[in-house]
Length: 401
Length: 198
Image (cartoon, rainbow over all chains, first blue to last red; front, side):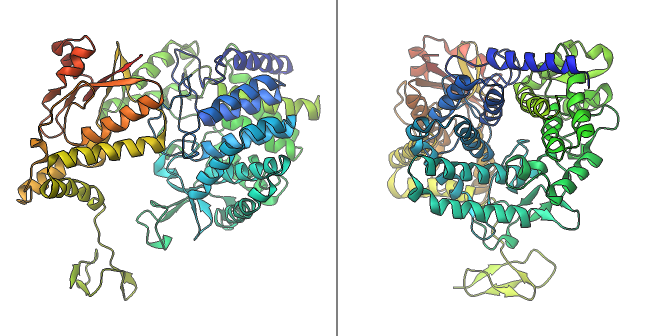
């Protein structure tokens, strides 16, 4: 791995995080004027984690304050907000966002021991836990959602692994925070519920035949009882980068053979044979705005695993890929070869679903400096991969440099 | 009472005495169409009009919108174009399959009251009625805007049944616009509204 380029990307990533925090506290998912110029709680929470890793403690605190103040009356965090904390969602429930906010808050508390902040927001924390548990199905002890990390209901509607891991871990963090601020009596039942969810993730969302965690138990309605009679009832077992979530959210050790085996499968089936880097799911799922290709965010996530199991070669292969594809030290959402981009564009045009915002995405891709080199760079810079990169670079540096 | 519930298989039709699941061999007949919840809501609107009149229907729909907005909290909808916002599709008309259910009821001779015939004295704060669903949607949007410290004016919509433009002329005047100007926005979307402050 080119160490000087890696360091430069790290510095630029920190600068981007600072530049893209609105004075109200929200982190833009991508800068104003680009595709995702809103505050998405999922991205925002990962950026808070990046800020914590980079010692930007005040920025992280302000970011958490912003998002907690934007909480909906029922305890949910929406798909996205404007800089004033007003809900600007256009998609339905994505419960992983609520889990992620709690997870990021828990990490902030672990780092700072800022009990006063937790006490101030305790009611909101409790509300979010209640909201998550309201969506728990007691027949299977898993959390139901419509969207998750890919915002793609066709493969995520039901009991999905990323949403369940984020929510389960979010509740466990809330329990830790409650214990720290003298609310132990309010959280013991919640801890029991979270442990049931964890057990269910590790058994129901694990396939001994594939030796891998699996993506989703598709169920249309949380109220379907028994689940076997739900009209959607089926299982998505395809490889998906989000199947690393149980370890990412600290529900299971990376040294556990189930995680090692899952990551081996992801590496074997999702590492892009042409461009390198990790694809988020198989090409035949066929929803790839900007063309099918690898994502730096998911690639950087797995660096965490390789560092935990002390596999330096693989950690450098994955982290080094992020360094190499950065253009002017900025990371895109994902990249694709021209042919994949054109197939996507032609498909969407032909069937009439190339919406205005996607037309603008096409224009931006064609204007990007990498276009002439035969690569489609979508949404540059995206803050989420930069935040993930900061976390992983610091992990790498602590271990090997 | 006997209910006839056909199996979704080639096997003989099953007759059951009570309306709950009955095991028949290895299969269970559960044939309630997925569209029935939406259809029920539309039939409910018709029946409420028959029972209590259109004013009651109007108030009922408003209350539904407001209550749901209180659950959702502050929020703003739509895509901005100049100084107005628009929705490219109507999410409620689409979710309720409004036009096709209406047509189905009409062809079956079951439209004993016509909810579209409701004439309501319109103020600038009311919905432009693309259909009765606009009453609920606008009440929802208005409450969420209020929670965000804003006012909203529903300037125009396209009829959910005929696609013809419908306007709230009071709202258009209140926002200092002209009808022709608002009509042009209907080329981009089916629902046009303005927030204050922007």
